[in-house]
Image 1 (cartoon, one colour):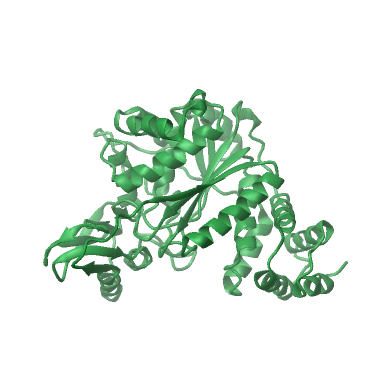
Image 2 (tube, one colour):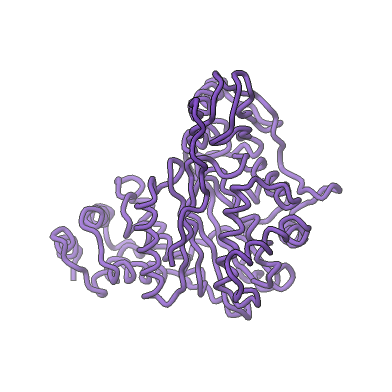
Length: 442
């Protein structure tokens, strides 16, 4: 067995055997296969695709390239949640305490942000003292006391995926449903979950640009899940405009606190309660036999009556985070307004391009262009007007922020302002209502 023959088979659209895929993943992991041959096979997969069987084998081999988490100490069915990424996506900090209030114990391994999609670990790390590098040996203790734990992904979790992803990024082989699906699912399987709810975002601020692509990816991940013995539900959500109002690490965590006080934006609350409801439906919780709408109603009540806030406090304090006497977390820095943008005309907002808003936030310092970039935790954007809102010329549409302790380059500020301003589009006619939950696939 050799890589040249394997590359040739996929080049001519032949199905790879389980042994061939195992040989490939093992060689990638131990460094025996050179990057140029790995890249050649990745490109052949992009061009010719993979069968469900091939995708599942690739996924399980990548998962087994490192440690598989044993979550049996949870004492219940392990349910995980994952998002394919978006702008203003602060669902995880809300979902963890919400599902914990139903007795669902969750181990959430999350990554840092790269580009305009913010990382959940970065958001939690914006809280003073919060430990995002929890030793796996401490997971059971935190689960017992708080019902949940969130930590950065460990190096031994699906190491083959990390190698393949870095190569895909520089060889223009990211855009492939089999490779995206196997990358996501390998980490989820390695994470030890029995059931997985996937938030598949689509639109201008997501990797999947339309609902057909999102459904295709969902179908692939559900198929992998079935063949791998995992229950998978995909909730397809819109990312044609940012989720909620705030974009940026501290700004988003401030919005999380507002939601937990019962003051959430409708689109954010709808996304959070829908995802949480499907996690509860897949769990051992007694409420799993209720309808999705009934569970969502309970979730909405718990977001506003202080129940979810109680569990949020447990999470923050349990992992070393500091809380102010007001009840709010203490942040490493705080947003300072640097520019407010206004509408250039009367009309209705027809677009708030999430990718442009996301890129503007990166220019302000809220995101990374390279993994080594330092974040400005206080940087970001607050949006006042969303799709369907009526504005008059001169009305404020958004505010740009930097951290109080940060210094921002004037050129980057100007670029951020241009991107944010151009993200808004206007019309004399009111557009159709935007739904945040577009479909559910299972």
